[in-house]
Length: 216
Image (cartoon, rainbow, N blue to C red; front, top):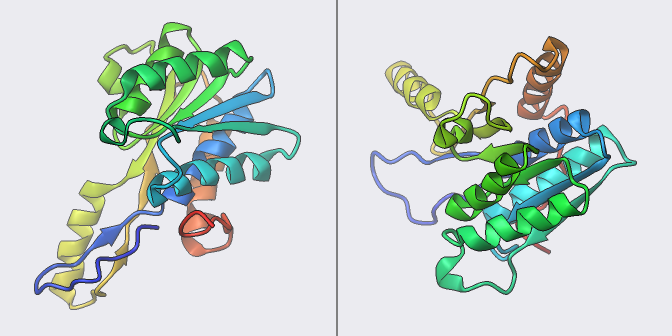
């Protein structure tokens, strides 16, 4: 989960989202739908705490779902610091490498860089899981191989914040609710039910990702 700002300001209530939980959910989903038992993740540098939590959460989710599946997680450790989130070419090439290694499910996080990875999956009809926004909508293809995207529920939090403020029940720091975009009908309803139960268990602390706040 993002650490709150040290500086406090009046009338400002930060809402943070647990990237490790979002990655964890994606990891469980990837483990459930892979057929090759090879899955991959492409993230920005592990030196950015949020990216570390996304991808290590993914790795933890895969392990939780099936210990026999090993997630191949690739960070862009040697990239241009000014292009970290906009290096679509690197994202695309890295996605291709994972697919050539047999990965049939790819998780990607990190702005345009992540979208480059998703594009590699879409062009080869490999299942992909995105973050930050509805990536299937971004690619504009109802037959896109983007299975889902995991993201913070901003509209829900805005409405809920107004209600809590009205009732006087608000904390200085609020953990935001996360969600995933609806799965395609080709996937069994039981899979969505499992993801819903997993989200609730993560929210309630019944399941822990055990991912550190930052890279050790």
